[in-house]
Image 1 (cartoon, rainbow, N blue to C red):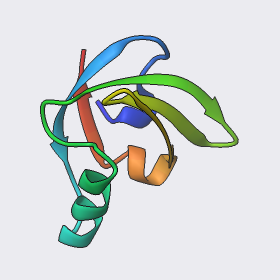
Image 2: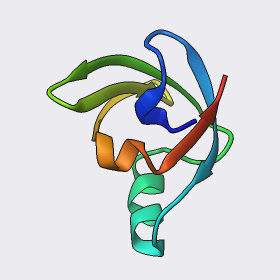
Image 3: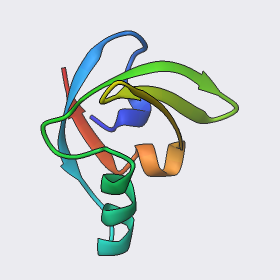
Image 4: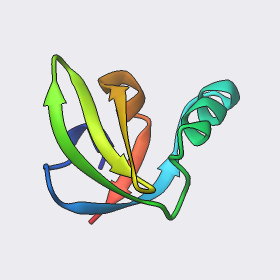
Length: 71
């Protein structure tokens, strides 16, 4: 399922990053790489605040739809 649809406070594993190459690179530079563990902390004005690699990162729903996760 896309990260944008993930429930809060549940650890998910990133399975796939979609989109064009430059979008993939941007997402990966933020720390979202296949196999990484990500947890949604909250949703604010359509953006997600997530924990990934001991950091909190805010991403828009559009980018979150390109990140496929599994529980």
